[in-house]
Amino acid sequence: MSSSTPGLYGLMARFPDADGLLAAARDWPGDRGRLRAYTPFPVPGLDEALGLRPDGLGWWALAGALFGGLSGLGIQWYSAVIDYPINVGGRPPFSLPAFLPITVILTLFWGGAATVLGFFLGNRLPRLHHPVFGVPGFDDASRDGFFLLVRAGGAELDAEGTRARLEALGAESVQEVAA
Amino acid sequence: MSDTVSSRTGMADPSDTPAAALTDHVAGVTLERPSSPAWIAGTLVAALIAAVFLGALAYLFAVGVGIWGINIPVAWGFAITNYVWWIGIAMAGTFISAALLLAGQGWRSSVSRFAETMTVIALGLAGLFPIMHLGRPWFAYWLLPYPNIMSLWPQWRSALVWDFVAIASYVGVSLMVWYIGLLPDLASLRDRARRRRAAVFYGLLALGWRGEAHHWQRLESATRLLAGFAVPLVFMVHSMVALDFSEGLPPGWHTTLFPPFFVAGALFSGFALVLVMAVVLRPIYGLGRWITDAHVDLLARTLLAASLVMAYSYGLEIFSAHYTGNPDELAMLSDRMTGFYAPAYWATLLLNAVLPQLFWWPRLRTRRGVLLLVGGGVVLGMWIERFMLVVTSLYHGYLPSADGRFYPTLWDWVHLLGSLGVFALLFLLFVRLLPLLPMFEIRRRMHEERPS
Image (cartoon, rainbow over all chains, first blue to last red; front, side):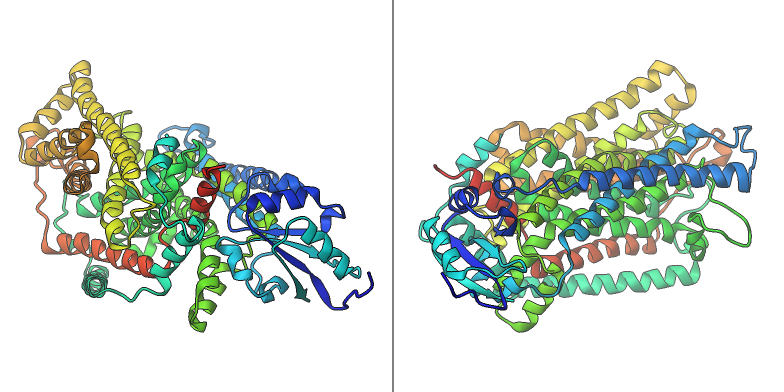
């Protein structure tokens, strides 16, 4: 229980299938915040097993939708009532029914756009490189490989103890990830 | 529904995991498989037609819309027909990727990728035609609200402005849906690529996707939220297109039936093209294991259902003309059935309402020739329908002295067929450059349907 390697990003364990990974994440004895799972598809139940917090994208969507709707209605109101009121067939300057289509459309558009913005910011993407790409065989994470990473996360990682624990949880192989 | 699909998917190849077999096959189509002579020939022909289209576009912008057959009274001709038709084709991708997602229809994933790609390409072409149709296309940006020295704003009460906002938003949301869904598959291609250039190309496109649990969590949330926005948006888009017509006064256009009628027609034509694509691509790229007869069967059933809605709409047009007793509407109706453009009316009925009834026979829903006949017939029939709707209401007015017929010129045809060439070119490039199936969704479906 000694050799903690400096400059180690973490340890990457490969599991035979999604169920093995799920069980390992559930039974992990240590700090769950250090775990990162890599899978070829969204595995149902993995979020709970890893203790992930809700991603909050719904709030992004709500904020975007409100911004889109209010700004869409706002610009129509400002231009047709304040800046350049014109009489079109005797309709009032603020013709709400006629202004609704654009308001609704922009609500939907900005809701979607803010969702995508939240998706990229929250995931810290785009990103050109990441330490896990250096792990031999990590290619399979986009094919049929299920990986669990234990991050050093600033602290020194007890490499041998962690390796033993991962293997006890059913890991097929455990590799070191260079920072 | 998904049970019937899964029981018929029939995963073979016990040596490899199904997920690995899927990934290697789909990535192999893009990365390893040499371009077939047929693909090269098709791409060359399509590129040639696309080049002709670009030349014709330059000629149009240089000379003006007088090169087309449009005039007063028929001021809307092929350009508007093509626009409405292309935008209708686009609907299927959004419907398959968004509405069927929200409805929990797992089978959609087999066809969603190329349907979404179809949407993006068709939308680009649809957006082009109204600009081509402008007498002064260099003023197209006047549709945007921006502070200018003329202190002018768009006329917010006009359906044309609504339509512009709707299409622009729809292009944006479709691109986002398409690209977000591509990320994990681009990462798969990056990881499979053996040549350095391909790895860098797909690596850059994948934006660093690693398949981390956080990524998937946000991808799933984002996909659902985007679907929730896209479904009402696509209904808005086609309603706005329809309002371009029904805000006008000519008999045959001025009806509240138009928005739902256009939405149904859009869905109908788009599904027909998806069906044709599925039947054509499946044998060429060996996708039969993932796009099974069960999938094609479901597409054919959807087409049949949409065809019944269309038939109902055609019936309702006849009914409401008689129900209101409005003499102009009645004259319009009888002119559509017996007038100069009557062949277009009867072709519409035959191709859109009669021919798809073949799909009542279960065996015909999986027979290649029938699928191509009906699917192709509907794509063609919907173009004819749009043409019929645009032209028959314009070419005769309330007084016979104002009548005037529309005859397409060579340039009308060049722009229509040229846009088909551009579509074919972009689609053929997609087939070679991007993953044809949403692999991660199918991997997930396999996981959920695994024998335990």
